[in-house]
Amino acid sequence: MQFLFLLTSLLTVASFVSAVPNPLPGSENIVVRDPTIWYNPTPRKYFVFSTGEGIRIFTSPSLTGSWTRVGTVMPNCSIINHPGNCELWAPSISFTLGKYVLYYAVSTIGSQDSAIGVATSPSMEPGTWTDLGAVVTSKPGDVFNAIDPDLIDYNGLKLSFGSYWNGIYQIGIWPDVNNPASPTPGTHLAGGNGRPAEGGTTFKPEDSPYWFHFFSDGVTPLAGSTSRPPPGEEYKVRVGRGTGGMGPFVGQLGFALTETRDPPTGSLVLGSHDNIYAPGGQSIFKDPVSGRYVMAYHYVRNNDTVGGQSYLGINFLDFSSGWPVVVD
Ligand SMILES: *[C@@H]1O[C@H](CO)[C@@H](O)[C@H](O)[C@H]1NC(C)=O
Ligand SMILES: *[C@@H]1O[C@H](CO)[C@@H](O)[C@H](O)[C@H]1NC(C)=O
Image 1: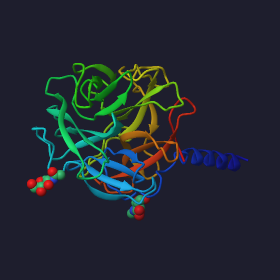
Image 2: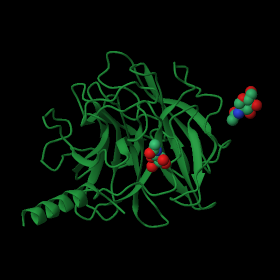
Image 3: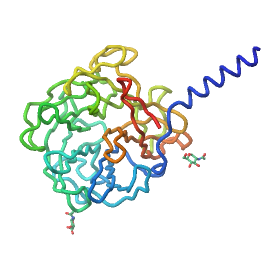
């Protein structure tokens, strides 16, 4: 009896632990950071853009591969005259105002001397990108850092950015993708008090009344790092929701993402599980082929040596419960 009870408990625990689906197959060896994903229906190809060099470009005929590194958005660096303008970060892709629009960040580790720039293309292919330069900048002493851009269309275009320091903010963009239309820092969406919240992504599923603000919370392991943070403090994807694209966004406990609380605000979407360690740097889009919502992110392999590379994770998201759930 006792044995059976124990066995049942173990099985329950086991099925609970394995409840988080693994990433779709096909991208387990694709080294990326902060991936952002889109689809071009003309050549029927998916495009993933990643931090590194002048933003790395990968393409694939399907979400399950095979992924190919095809080139770089800005092989000759960004025109922004700033430290870090050849090693660009945290791209964000969308199809906006009739063109493919890619925001990127120029910065150096731990610095607030940063800029967000934008490049546009008719196709997303290497060699077709026009760099329009800086849109938002920050300097030491600002409440935000001008990195981790994300664009939405909510009562006109809105660009969010920022991490650590006092968190993630949002300004208006008008009339074109390289024109700030309201002053920084703008509307405070998430984070604050130096909380390690970054990589904000705002998204509205077509069939949901809610807007969701996803962000990466915690310490991200960089390639070459020599230690891991205490368990539970590593990167994870959290979310809050609101009735508009400018917040306030609240987690399932009802607290706004801008509140400083313990436990921290924002509900868990994806944390470490199985061989997936410290997932984050996420982006969300609706896949026009499957009609499903897709999250792309990076993670480190749990079985790798500390300081290993990060790889491309892709999963479907289901919003039917009112909150995003990672599903097969
Ligand atoms: C980068 O610079 C090289 C050398 O000046 C040039 O040949 C090449 O066309 C440039 N590439 C782009 C995409 O501007
Ligand atoms: C670690 O995980 C990767 C990806 O799942 C796998 O290919 C590799 O064989 C594993 N390495 C070891 C040493 O188990």
